[in-house]
Image 1 (cartoon, rainbow, N blue to C red):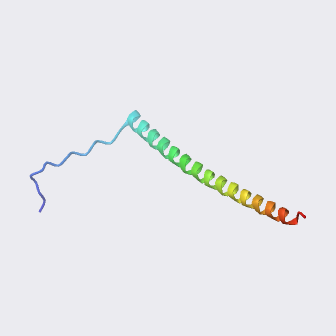
Image 2 (cartoon, rainbow, N blue to C red):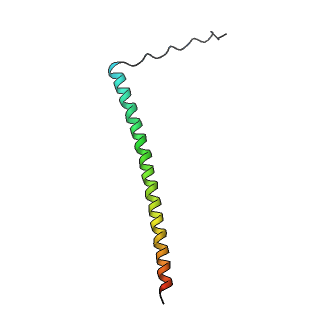
Length: 70
């Protein structure tokens, strides 16, 4: 049995016309912004890895060259 002492909240009517269009447009813009943030974070992580790799390679090269010096 259901509790009928609490009145059921009526569902919001679906948006129509320009309101529906604007709501969909805002939802798309929000998804695009989130995707852009994720892509930027991935690019930054890749850049950081490449920089770290280049610095490590440079340190190894300097150490190798230092050993060759008389």
